[in-house]
Image 1 (cartoon, helix red, strand yellow):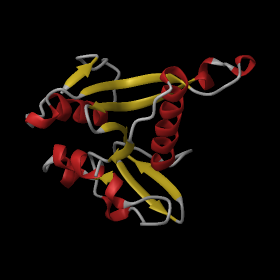
Image 2 (cartoon, rainbow, N blue to C red):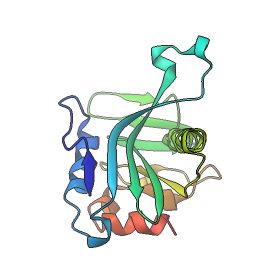
Image 3 (cartoon, rainbow, N blue to C red):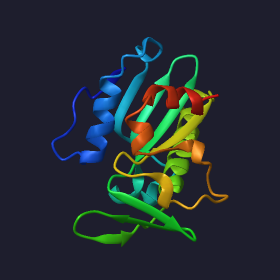
Image 4 (cartoon, rainbow, N blue to C red):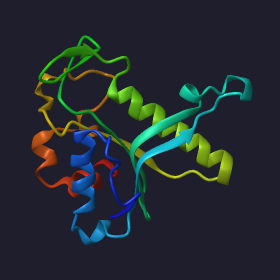
Length: 172
């Protein structure tokens, strides 16, 4: 895969570094020419007077442009993640806290914002899908509900398994 930029910023979270390395070292010949943007900032649909630095740009952890397939938006969440009754929690060695927005919602918002941007800029639509990656934990603590399909989640076991095959399977 072709990564843009070809390196991680020194402040990149450890979980994103893991995904970056996995994408960078993918040896599947089918993904060789895929272009991957890491930490891509993109303008969201906000009127000029509402353009504040913290609301004007959205961010995609990883955005994959897969030739002849479409676009895959990836949201990465490190640490231990749980979801119960629609409440998403993240915990690490020192703390446990509620997420302001579910990772699923983040991935959906990014997917549709980027689709809208491409439509306005180039008057084109491309097939799009999303994937939420939990490289540090199992999805066993995530309650399955109507908000998402577990097909769009990748946990630690799948992450260290055949990662690129998961990318192909969500695009079908």
